[in-house]
Figure (spheres, rainbow, N blue to C red):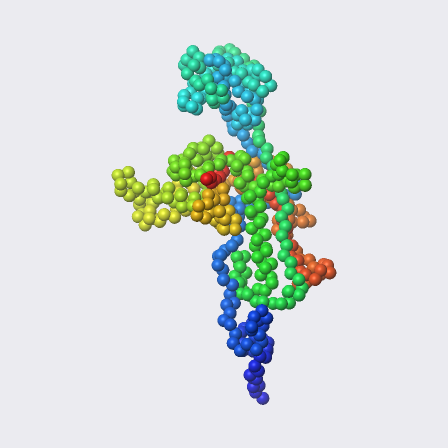
Length: 481
């Protein structure tokens, strides 16, 4: 016998076997003049409008680094110092003597006087560019904090031609000279030194909670989340966004992190902080202030000259905000103009079409290769891009130059030299507990039966820190008024 469907009566509600809007499915509008007696339903858009596009900010560290476990409260690494002997801030005490301070700032890694008799030096006057080759006749420490070396120039009677301004000179050893039949008893042994750095992980937490009653009031929304999930979600959509926000915090906390200083009261409260990427570069790296205002290509060439004095790593990555990225494009576009007013396409494989594409993603200058990309974290209005509007200077950070590849360091735990990416994250983990990215449920709702709380709580936790090795090869672009 055929089943004849019964037309719904006015105002009745009948369930549907599928999630769809039918004549028999009416909505309850309790906050207006509409009620169950309403005959016509409004036009409903099920899909959530993605008006901000991809809202997640993480991904920077996945591009340039790695993640590795650790078991301790602190990660310690050592970085090599320079090979050759050099001192800055040298003073010409007399026309035949030079003095310099014996402290951590006196030279690159040397805190003692390791210049020996019979060594030969180059004395440089940075103010005039003049240099003088001298022979060391004596080298002593006149006090616990001051070294004095007596010299005789090779091409002059004394050092009259050099500046007498205190701390204005620089010196470095380039060799030695001995007479026939002499001993080497005056040579000072140089013990290689290294610089040790450390960082500590911080514990990061987040939580999402929903009561048992609210879990039963389902409102379907069709979504496509940044994490790749798609379909219909109800209250777990909020849980999904909490997870995405927490994953962003995992990166943001080690990029922006600061150590607690002596002037802060947080130390007395038991907090220690962690050294983030920006703080590490400001403390041990290179900072370029207001890149655009100081002269475009000329300013960038100054960066290259400084990189030459550091590790001279050939491949580097530029992560920039929108304005600085455009400044680089303008700088590179100007290089295509010919010397006689024509257009030279040689920089673009002699392709006019390529020359007119002004969104440069990679370029070579000198002996360095650079790969440029926008860093969303510096553009997003809810993070560093919040102050990039008209008439605003910016968030203080315009971009960062990160060297590609790996560095060799001495691992204090393993007792050997190891290769690590210049940027990498260390997280706490052991056989009993992996704290890279933990999540768990508590309460008495949604499958969790751990307490009498009439709610479902989703917990997130991580414990991590960032290791910035060889920060002298990094460049931070900052803004100023």
